[in-house]
Image (cartoon, rainbow, N blue to C red; front, top):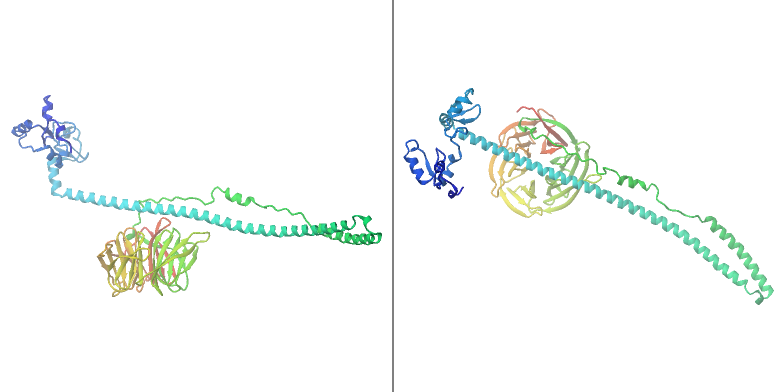
Length: 555
């Protein structure tokens, strides 16, 4: 708010005088000194005008509106031209706007707008637009977080490739050095053997030479016998020395094809090609009117798969509680790897780009953490098992912490070490599916034929809605798309139902009536894979991947 001491009286200024303003005429938009304000009230033409103190006038919403014509400062705004969306005086209306189709009285327009609640309607539109901006901001923020996670994933993958190369080179170096040591040891032993033989020859020669020294000191017979002995020994030594010489070979050692590693290191793109894909945000998926199109089927015979999760853009994890296994599939190459779990699993949730937490129901109640290691050949590695004091069922990740359901009527918020942060009371019995979306906990329950509940994720667990349907029985998996619409698997009714974000039934999006493969479905997940949203579903021993395509009908 401006300081009133800095304002001058507009009327006094027009008369070449300077007086401090103390008030303002709302109708004339003139700042007035005390004397001019009194005269303003006394003048017949302005006695009905609203004159307020400067502070009150600044607070008045009308003080920011110009009530006089921009081109004719001495004329009030009297008409509104809808063609130009502009208010003006009558003089402008008869000149610049004489050919416009819709020019109406400003007061009548204001009155009609008030009667038609146009202010409330405009405010509602602005609020809706503000909500859309908030949603877009959240969507872009989520996209940014996903992009950053992918950047971190690529960086980690590059470092993993580098580490694998280093480990590979270290391993081959160790093997090569061992081989070199064996060659060195063997050849050196041969060298030592030859040298020792020659050393023995020298000792024998030295002895023979000593025997032939000082012949005058020996009688001729002794000298003759010594000479014959030396001659015999010489012949033997000569034969042995010849054998040593013939068996000895000079040895050279060197590297062959040593440029192979150099060529690899000089490769311009040793890590592959970096690809950045952009998706038009205007092509937002209309989940409620899309058709599900089957894109691939991943099969692992003899397994009952109770939960499923997308990991990276091209891999899928599935839990098999028949064999206590966690399977890894590639959407094109099918089965990739498996990991033996510590007990009988039920559900899982992603805790990172390449990690999941799995609930283990027996023989020991626990949560097992598993990482996907993207090495030369991807594999699954169990990193930690956290024991629990309750039997877990469903699980969802919440910013590093976990929400875990059980059969005792509680949803527990725990940290990664299993410490309970707080609990929320729900219906006792089996909570099967569990997911978290926009601070809402969605879970399916076995009560009666099966119901789905939505709670607001606060410490009291405020219930928002309960859903049940005549075509839904034994609901197991639940999931949400990125608009908050809910998907429920009916295991006994062999179908998948779609609800909108408010929990209202939209349609039966998959059913055995239309596809025989929809048989005893259990797990469901909506996830982005390859920049497109996918619906992942387990049926019997199959993992089925669907894409959302434009066009569809409610059934």
